[in-house]
Length: 403
Image 1 (spheres, rainbow, N blue to C red):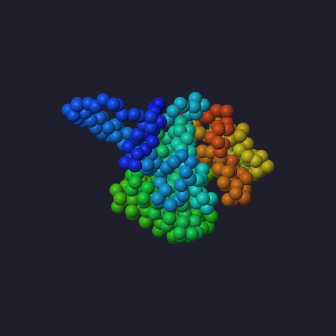
Image 2 (cartoon, rainbow, N blue to C red; image 1 turned 90 degrees about the vertical axis):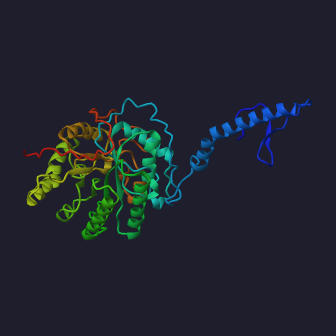
Image 3 (cartoon, helix red, strand yellow; image 1 turned 180 degrees about the vertical axis):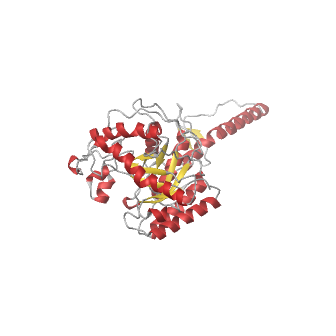
């Protein structure tokens, strides 16, 4: 190993040893016994130093160089770190008040080439850990789940994660993400996984039939049980064809957006309580009654948020702006926590790629943070939640509005 600090110029011999270019052998010779003892000491010291530096050398060999852009190929995975770096200094403006937050790492769109790096995900996780115990991912492409779960190991933090196997009209997409999901589960285990979502609004987009979606849910549930994870819930985030979906999934997930209902931001929280009960929670209560069950399936808001730009992207009384996003934050977050409403805030940070994909500017500006991880609002709601603990799969349920 080349010494990092030396005053003597050096070169590498053909045998791989280090030779000091200015070194001249001393004229006097030592006795054979003395030289033998000195040589033995040098040999022992060399072995000790080699063992000391061997882990560092190996880690440099297996860890991707900073800035290297991995692709979706299974061979380009983040190094499985055993050392931790810690969270670093905390931001006093951030409060762990969000029950959950939707998260898409930048550079995880396969059609755009994949550009996600471990370093970028770690920077995101440092912020996410300070505002929420749980995150929800939207797909498996570009090894995003690996970077998230491995990043948690590096930071030595625990967060609950919903993993999503993306579903669209292309069966190849599903198979690719399906295969990746099982590899991730085998690699990292299920300790941090709090749910598996089979697609997101695939029925709403009319990209899959309800029979196909139900078959996929059944398949994943069966395999999760076979792999020793019978308690991890499996579901989809869709309420179309709910009577057919609900008996098959372990929870009802719905993307609930008062913005698209055209509400004033001041009315958005109240609108959400009534929508959630009437559309999501009430059907689970009626299903339990029909089946003569005392335990209803939990309902969850998988998305709720408010865009911040552009102002001309309004829907009736709902106007995108940072000020209006803050109104919903201040009137919804802590009240939802007190009521026991499970939700994932949409979303962690702005996603510039969406305006290119959907040809619609507003889609890119729903983040609490901008694309560079700068907090948009002046302050966040202050109702601190406990740190998530491994194995916590509990989904709280509020009392029905009419009780």
